[in-house]
Length: 133
Image 1: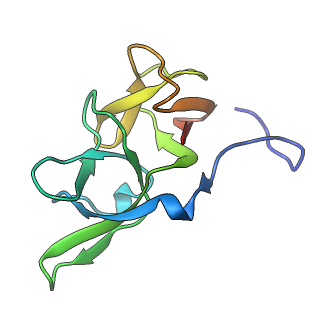
Image 2: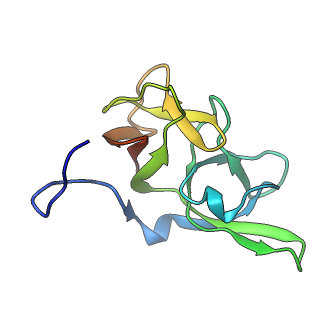
């Protein structure tokens, strides 16, 4: 793992406020899931779920708000970002790969790179710095 200083370039930690939207969240998502990949959940309107195996990643979960009093669970999703997404254990992900869901909000390499969807700019430990613009 590289050592970082003010002289290094990293794309980790960037997001665009204008590209963060509020979505309904699938049952079972908690604050522990912040920072994971999400995909469209067709079981409801304006709803996302943690990315499942092979799912297209539409964003990164930025926050979770449990509004159980109102009977809803909502969260902010970053639709454009350059930030960490967790790599599934034993999955091989490399710089330049496009990633898809691997289950539970984790990611794995897609069968073929498609940088119009996303690309991996850096690997930090068990996380990929994914750029999705």
